[in-house]
Each structure stands twice: as C-alpha cells, then as structure tokens.
Length: 114
Image 1: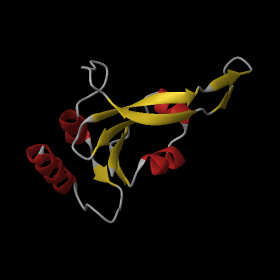
Image 2: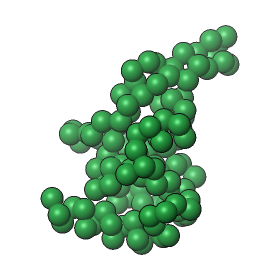
Image 3: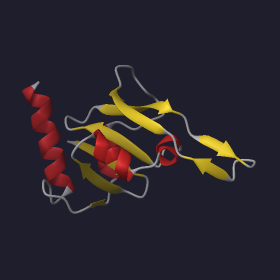
Image 4: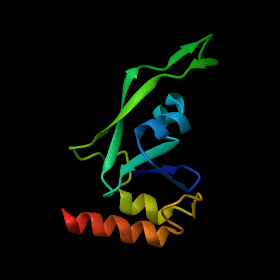
C-alpha cells in the first residue's frame, strides 16, 4: 500500500506501484502534481524508465513510464509526509481509511514497528 498526495489536497490510497502508474501519468508525476509515500510515510521518488517526451514546442506530451523508489537522501524540494498530510483536505474513498486521522495513526504505528 502507498499514499499519493495530490497538489489539490486529496489523499489517494493505492494498493501498489502498478495502481500508481495506472492512476497518474508520468507527466503529472514529473511536474509534481502528485507525491508518493510508502505506508510508513517515507518518501517514494519516481525514477523514469522511459522519459516523458515533448513535441511541437512542448504542446504535445507523450507520457513516460516510472517506478517508485525509496528516497534515502534528504530532499528539500519535497514535503515530508507529516507536512503533506497536514495540508491534505480530503481522503478519496478507499477500503482502508476513512479519514486523514486514520492515515496518520496508521503511519505512526508503522514507524513504531520498525
């Protein structure tokens, strides 16, 4: 399971990376429209296996493909999970969590179990 936090404040709970790739195009990921976090709140960074391609002066875009990898380095241009979830406004319906508070509690448990 992973969390996708969209720039509009929506939290999406996804089963796995395949679901992330189905739900979010590479161009949106590259542009920072969505940020991914593992179930323990650690940042997942996109690594493009096929880059996005821009054509006709950037007006047409062919979306690339990406994998999500844990970030082992400090990243200053991406919010931590705590900040991102604090700015979130809504959880998209899913079978696991009904609220942001439930997600926070889950992530905290995951961190304590490490």
